[in-house]
Length: 91
Image (tube, rainbow, N blue to C red; front, top):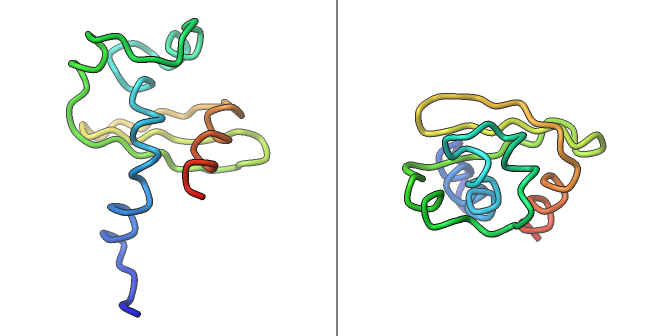
């Protein structure tokens, strides 16, 4: 078994999280994305997404996470549903 590097861990471990968190980092603050009535991205939201996005689960029990964007922003989020979806995507 090959040793796991930080780069390989980030590349393989966040693939599922990128899709889940993509809507949270597109133009509008996360609060408005969470308040949306649908889980689907609109065509304009999908087109606006550029670069990788990563979700860092800080405290799963309390739903705390950080969303890291390609433009070096970090967005602190408390959303138990988002954390649950990200963790289930990693199974």
